[in-house]
Length: 322
Ligand code: ADP
Ligand code: TRP
Image (cartoon, rainbow, N blue to C red; front, side, top):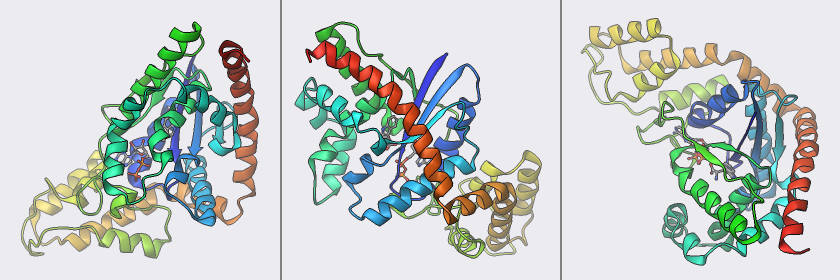
């Protein structure tokens, strides 16, 4: 049995890119009865950028609601909130003391954030150590992540290796699992869909707001009557990702036939999302209206996660000499 673990920051409401690129594939992986999955909301990592307590709380619930709405089975797996397991901070300290300063200073994601932000806090600097603690605290074997996170997993392996080298075999060195089939989902402007570029589609919005986001997808100025290119069209790309091959063929014929405007294509995309995700959208809204159930799920998961965390930490404490 493989233990799979992944986290997603609560830095906003999960968008279509997060869902198609991370949440849905992870849930699919968790359905294999050979696996045990630990999925968590990295709300301590979010503190590196979010300073509004209410917003942090709301984002954490929305992220949890998205996992639950898409059917993550919390009985056969473990679903929790990072901040409910304070053991992770202790684990982080042990790893901090074995992590060379240049390794953190040279990390791509740190250099990238440090060049863009005005306030570079130590949390951003030690972000990969907290992430390594997240993984090593649960003896995780496989960590599914996007390409941008690969370096963090390599650093995690280095930290586990350094610990094992110093104190003897203690921690499990995890493997990355990058699903090459998972493509980068483009946003409304054709760049990678991201919370930070404000080009996302949030399928959990009300019908009216969702339609407005979809109508905002950038297109070229080909006239309504003229045939249109499907290649490179943001509306078509998103439609193709969600539609069946028959529906895509019909849309392609509409593009090539002319007398079919981008407004029509956007309307079709909107209707497709509404139909395809009807159940998940309704479930998300229901969970967010009364958050008791989300809280109960997270508490249930915290008990299970803490059990594992405490036993691994006990092993670590003995090794370091406590
Ligand atoms: P964002 O860029 O919106 O802040 P995150 O960095 O929080 O997203 O990513 C959370 C997860 O969603 C990661 O596993 C990441 O690889 C995945 N992800 C984010 N944006 C996309 C996208 N446009 N296409 C595919 N996967 C994505
Ligand atoms: N850093 C990851 C991201 O931004 C989120 C994360 C935190 C994570 N801890 C983790 C992912 C542990 C995998 C394993 O996407």
